[in-house]
Image 1: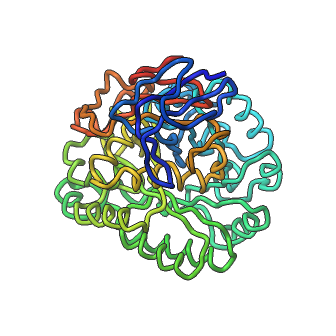
Image 2: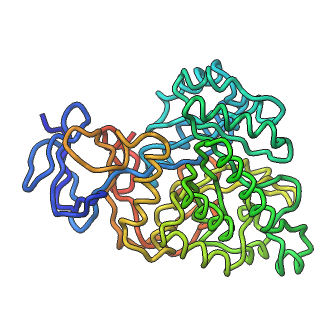
Image 3: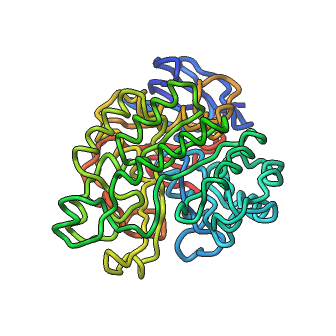
Length: 422
């Protein structure tokens, strides 16, 4: 029995595009792709693109531990509005996801999510970089992605052992080439003008080289997160050409915004790694379009209002992005939609190991994880309408082109005409 029919749109996937309707059966799977399909609830996709849902590889929700900032429910509400049908959550919760018990607790929260949530594990106990987490135990529970973020505390010997364990258990190691505590923004003309301690872009490049060489030594599958340096991307590309199992991501704020934004002293522009200069952002766009960047990930990291209101140098790193990532990417990159979807859906699904249910080629029998995109819709994000608890966005008031009209998760219509239905 047909439950939903998406009519009148252009279906786009890795194989190309075609005018077609998509029918979703009672089991939540695609039952038919063809012309003039009928039955069930009708979603009008006239003039729109119908494609697989987006997959985010780097989101920070705050449950358990800091539910007043963000919850699984509020975070995934934001995600589906932004077109995400799957989100990879980072392990930096309280407690840290660093044990079998913590994994089981997180998995019990899946019922609160509006989309699929995948969990990553902490590479080290409590994320402190002093001892490895029980990687094997977490792998047995389905964790395949392990992350470490505090490189002021992780020595090369422990990192090598971590990568060797990752290889043994066929897991992916996720690393961000950033050391906390060395500064607050990009080191350059703007930091000098403002008198704010800067962070040299060379730090990221050196760490990237170290991680790449360690991955080559151990044969580990490495995913480098939140790259903001074009030279770092070039280092990664060279290693990939040599056969290294390495992928990388960038975020929309790292190619859409520059360190000039910090002149406002708004803490929403304090991110890790920091916003770079226009020269770097323009080069990163070129590298995305040339295929040297595998994925666009949000690094969605909400902060409580009392910390957002602190002076810039005292505020924590982090900003939000799930609801705006697609539109910012479509607006800034000026690329065919297929290239944007490759970086935001098809390749991230493969990196996360979700290609059987997300991204990929739309065909009968696949889960109905779909979005309807109005790629010509012009709109402006407003903090008064953001779904999550954090009410500040670096793209508040920006003029964007491209909007998610509808989102379906396992065949259920969770967003209709831009409004959450659950």
